[in-house]
Image 1: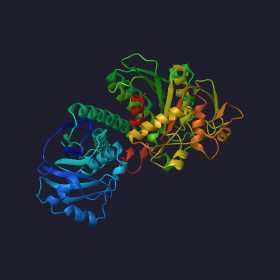
Image 2: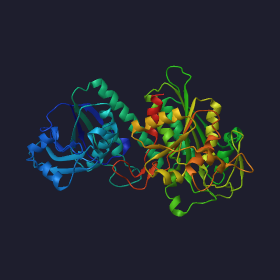
Image 3: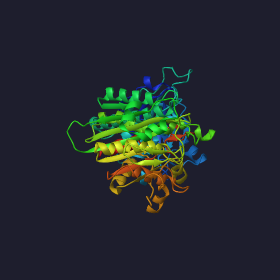
Amino acid sequence: MVNCFFYIQATYPVPREEYKLNFRLLSGDVLKLKCTTLVLGVFEGEGIKGITDRVDEALGRVITRLAQEERFGGELGKSVSVNTLDQIGAQRVLVIGLGKRSKISPDTFRKAGMVVAKKTKQSLGNVVVGFETDKQNGYVSAFAEGFLLGGYEFDKYKTTNNKRDAGVKEVGFLWAGLSEEVFRKEIEFAEIVSEATNFARDLVNEPPAVLTPTKLAEIAKDIARQENLECEVFDKEEIERKGMGGLLAVSRGSEEPPRFIHLIYKPRKKTRKSVAIVGKGITFDSGGLCIKPRESMRTMKMDMSGAACVLGVMKAIPRLNPSCVVHGLISATENMPGARAYKPDDIIRTFSGRTIEVVDTDAEGRIVLSDAISYAVKLGVGEIIDVATLTGACIVALGNYTAGIMGNDEKLIQRVIKAAQRAGEKVWQLPMDDELRKEIESDVADVKNVGGRWGGAITAAMFLEKFVENTPWVHLDIAGPAFFDKGSEWNPKGGTGFGVRTLIRYLLER
């Protein structure tokens, strides 16, 4: 049995540029630690045990009574709170559910970290968190990651109450048998991954008047300078010279010029292994001439979530040093209904030379991705993974919390699925049913950009498959989990940074 405690000094909120947590190992008696809030964990169906029982006894069994009154049984994410009346060092005890012990995993503690961050958000003092487990496989890292993700807020445009000297200052761990070396490695990983995810969230949450294709390219250049990456950005003229007709066509209706972004990470040791991660970068999607209704257009700043994911990953991996070359590719543009906008019935010649019949200008993401995917093929990469808020059909099929995954290589698909499971991000494989391929056949071009009404997420993936040649390829349709209109216990309101944690873990195991 391993005892783990986390010591946190908590005051909120603070802009992230001023926000810095110090993590360290601690020692001490949980009953004597002076703190505003003591957070304890209970497994579902097991009652009050271990450290929680010790605290409960010191408080005259008030936790047991309150749990019975509120029908709290340790369900994951649920909680009860009591005032200690100074009977122990803590002023308040917060008991949170950890779910069933048989289902314990790093994601249990990742979610626990998120809950603790939210529940202690208004605390003006320090917080001590204590859990008991018989394993410690990545649990410290997962909790720290969850806490850093759970405290996320996008408040940079608020003019009040966001400049106070507030925020969690220190997180300390009392965990038997955990060495300083292992602790430091786990904390470093959690900090890098959560920073990259929150960075992607920030990009998604920026207003579209700020985060234009040009600004996105500038951010990519900044990342390259900071992280010692290679970077190449094509402006509109270079995109024309390269023959990227898909990106050009979609950009024609906007006053904002398009950009094609190429970031390259190279490991310290030479290798032939290479992966391209490709992001859809529609910085605002009005639908073009097939214009969206008002409610559907709202939040369409998030249509560059795939690009944000790619930039978040490229920001993180130089500090984690995966053993493969990684190309980050982004086709960035707005989709607007200007006087020169592309039209239904247009035929577009893409970078690959293949032609596309335009049926719906609101199916623009796959068109700009076709050029980026073909560019990755030309680079000769060993694998391609594209990330895109591609279809509403995927949300209809899987809901808001799960991404669809498809591809042409089952082994690659399964490796990405396993990486997502380790990251705590939900993905579900959709079938590439050959009978649906006829839906995107065109009488006048090589392919149509949309098929029939049914199976839209799948036919969109089949469209992209036309451009991958024989390269092993996976498509992640993140339309559902990329952005939430309402927050939840596990997710913030707005951009989520979905895919960053999955791709980082995948690349590290490549």
